[in-house]
Amino acid sequence: MNDNALHNRIAEASKTLFSYCMARTPNRWEAEDLCQDILCELVKSSARLRDERAFYAFMWSLAGNVYKQWCRKRAGARTCPLPEDVAEIPAAAADDESDEVLYLLRRELSLLSEKFRRATVLYYLERKSCAEIACSLGVSESMVKYLLFKSRKKLKEGFEMERKLGMLSYAPKSLVPLYNGEGPNRFWNFMQSRLKQNIVSACYNDALTDEQKAMVEGEEASPEYFGLDTGDASKDDPRNQDDIGENELLVVSFGTSYNDSRINDIKSIEDALQEAYPDWSVRRAFTAQIIINHIQARDGEKIDNMTQALDRAVANGVKNLVVQPTHLMHGAEYDEMCATIDEYRDQFESVSIAEPLLGEVGSDATVINADKEVVAKAITAAAVEASGFDSLEAAKEAGAAFVFMGHGTAHVAKVSYSQMSAQMQNLGYENVFIGTVEGEPEETSCESVIEAVKAAGYTNVILRPLMVVAGDHANNDMAGSDDDSWKTMFEAADFTVDCQIAGLGEIADIQALYIAHTQAAIDALNA
Image 1 (cartoon, rainbow, N blue to C red):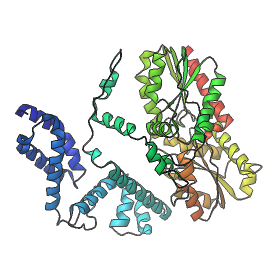
Image 2: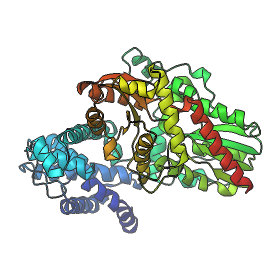
Image 3: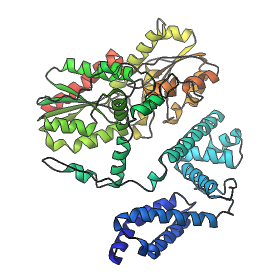
Image 4: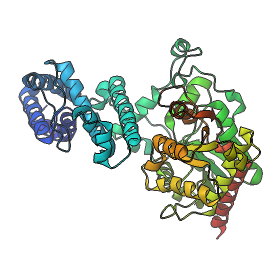
């Protein structure tokens, strides 16, 4: 490789190398020093590079060696600085592996939001009590315990990802796409990004072989590895057929690998829409590729993702496209869906996107639209009926409260959960509470909801998902047996708990609301 080519390659790789160094050093200055050491060694050792196609393998091998030397030099150091003026963390053993663990810990701590990170640092590093932390952060002791619990979970997940993905984070694969056929080569352009190449690789390799699936069969097998029976997939309809016609109604869902929920919730919505609009061909798209992969690997059912569904519409000559998302709100998933559709708008004569279930997001918790009232009444009525009480008032007199658990989001649309809570109060549903898995907004965290239910004097709790499908979150985060499930946490707070595993999609009034949203989108095409 000549000098110009070498310098160009190094210039291209410098940002990636710096990111590699930032993930392994306590601050920017040390990352810059380490990166300079690697670049200098790369220039000095370039004469040993025989084949320029092996440049990146050569570079990462060399970077690893330089990093090991750097770790040995720092082996005597007993502290690892953290962001935001945190002074030190516990002493490390003088070996590369322990040092690496400390830097992984520093990295994962830095990825926590400020509230979670401060609570963790104060408790584990500064040895503050929960009472002292509560005073410092201006929250209750119960909230501090919740923050610490969630932080431990997030840190564990981060370490687990590092264990599973390892060098993929700093030595990604390189894929060369092959393309055949007429028309614009959008596949080639798409695959020029190394990140997108590795996403494709990860999705392709996610499917398990028959031998691997056989290893995890049984009652204790995890649903992530296809071991549990979640229902008969043959009762589902992937709605990926051709012969669409000129008018397509594309129903977009996040998706679920729980077969019964997919049939009861998503398919039920799709069937209701097809019955309501016989002149439109209803088709399906999921936005979660990993769920698509799981279903195909386990059940052999092929469901289109957004790109595949839109490509199918174009190939079938669809002229008028209406998209009905089953998403709960105008959140991140909805925004990403709209961005994908925008890339295809010029392929159709007309495109209209319907509202998600809860409709428009108001400016604050007091601005509530009619859609939220419909949903509040529908889910409460369904929960009361399933609980065996004659009415919500009868449940209240028996000391029973209903807690509807949503997903939660850091997106600005999280105010929708506050609006749903306000809507319940406006309807006089005093024994109905709204919570979220993610604790976003803050008052919807499990600990906060437990405090609110306890303060209201209720002793029995009925948990039900505020989600379109009753999938992994409903079965595990809500009704699971782990210490961090809502069922377990409510029981630990001395409540009697009953769980209803049912999604919103199976409720007739919810289906009717989707039908109304679709009608508004169709009307917009003709406006």
